[in-house]
Length: 194
Image (cartoon, rainbow, N blue to C red; front, side, top):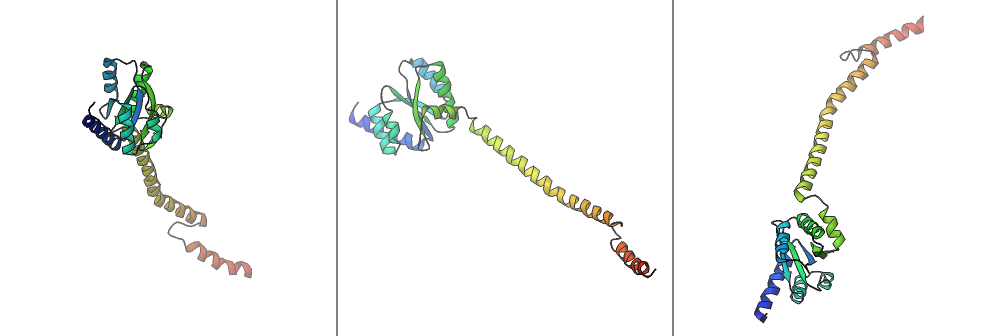
């Protein structure tokens, strides 16, 4: 590879590390070209899978400020899945493909600048897609708001029932609040006099 091509390759990898929301490093030894094509399709539209040269990738990762832990994993035939959108979808694609094709080995990855182990990537794949999680969150928020609205709407009617019950307990009709008290005070002197 000529020096100009290496500089271009490093610049492209650096830009991919910086612009991607996540990157997953894999070893692809033993996979055929057809299997690599199948893997690329399984990652979804928001991810790309590229075979990389370790030396150039180490330089690019360093230039992009990626964790040095990732560069330590760059040994043997390496490929990186760069994820631009939903990281969960790409992680599921990698996990499922590696289960069916044991030659694909997930070495680790970086998500929003944080280093991830292969186990963490598999756990990430177990999550539901972003859209489903957002829909569940919206549903939960709507339900709690509906509950709060119902509670606030019920407060005036509950207060009215409480006042009616208090009036009834005093012994008068809701409009005759002062009548029992006046009648009781008029009867009191007669009881004492007699």
